[in-house]
Length: 441
Image (cartoon, rainbow, N blue to C red; front, top):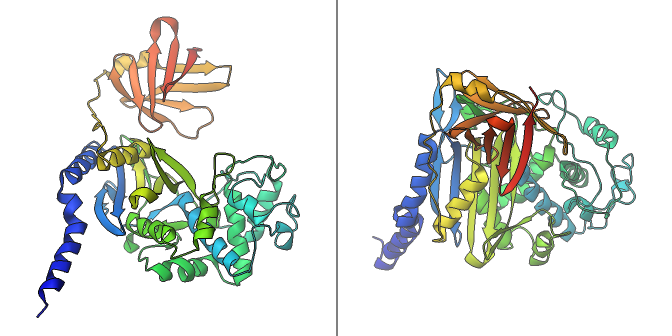
């Protein structure tokens, strides 16, 4: 029979795990996600941990959404985490540095001499995005796998190369190359190195380098809402590689970043380098986030309409992760609202009570609007009973939800759209910035 101290200890652990969920804070968090779910504003999963123990989790939406079949997501549902993968890759690089197998000053000429400036670009430049290597964001036929040789050719032929150290510019190419270097140094596929050096080492259960999505493995598809949620095409993860190819869950992500800040993966010296921000923008694998007077380190991620973020607040020993496979209401606002609730700050639960505008009256907003200063062209038209706006440089339109007569909102990109019919004007407002466009037809 267990002694009294053991029983009390078990109760204490249980209280830590469920206490927040049953507290006023937990109920407020629940109310946020409930209204997002009820109004089809988001699909995703969140985890919050304190002192290494998960104190709150919430899952909304579906991992599979079809007219004839829908599967609700759960806490073990896995999401593509996009550029959060860069933190994992940076950790492996610093492990190799600590083992003397590479240095921050090691240049690309020993690994990829065919690349421009290979003799000048160092590992440190790749880690903090000061390499001058252009970003590879869009690629034709992205469902098709690519070899390392093919990707190196794409990178080398990309326009926009600059000298390393001249400035910082975020580039997926940097961490794709770091992944290739890891494979050359270890003689193993990146997926195996990831598992050996991080996943198995700290006991992650749902993290690995992704393949094509398999619903039977509790992996989620990504969606874009257009009246209903519509499944999005998948990028073959051989294209982003180590820069954005990992699959995980919020629970694994908070465990990972806690292990990183507890020196279970790299030394304090290496962690300090990862946190050091160059040009007030990027660290070596980590971003600096600020919430009022609080500082956190982490990384956002996005791929194929998946959006994710992980952050750690050192002074509060708090980790938060949110993975989304469908967004209308912005992920940034969901995470900030959640943190404000947790820290007892002012917050507001969003309301989704759109004004009703008859379809026939939506016609008056249709047309092509331009601003020649930037330049920008946006075409506004009706799609069934919904008004949509399509910027010329975007492949698909954004839905506009009526707030009042002549005023709409686009939660997807956090923009308020106001039409001035008398003057043929459309005003876009985002985070206090305003852009005016003039109707051309």
